Length: 147
Image (cartoon, rainbow, N blue to C red; front, side):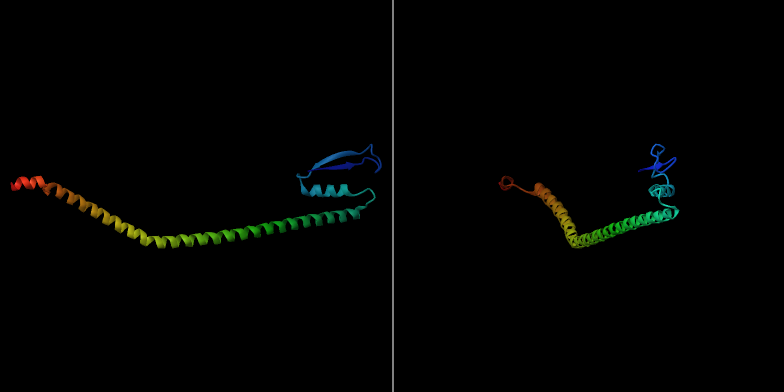
């Protein structure tokens, strides 16, 4: 932000002697406030009016700060409500996962038992197939033995 200030060299009505100076608003708040208050005074205003102008400006700045703080508090309250809502959702998800784990545990144990039985049965099947292959006599072999 840039503030333009007219500084009169001679009389308040002398426009030829006026020069314009620019002040960067971001440089310093104290000189900016004083200079902006001084620049807002008309030539007819006296020194007492400067105090009133400064007080009015400070009240405006304070009011702006209060409004900004209230807006920030409202946003923080809204954020807090959203976080509480998300925490509640996370708690429900966590409890659902725990219930799912608890209900899945017996099924996993049963699956393990069935896999062990399958392994045992497969092993027994292989032994029986080997036995049948070695000791199984076909009808032709039985006929040859009996003949």
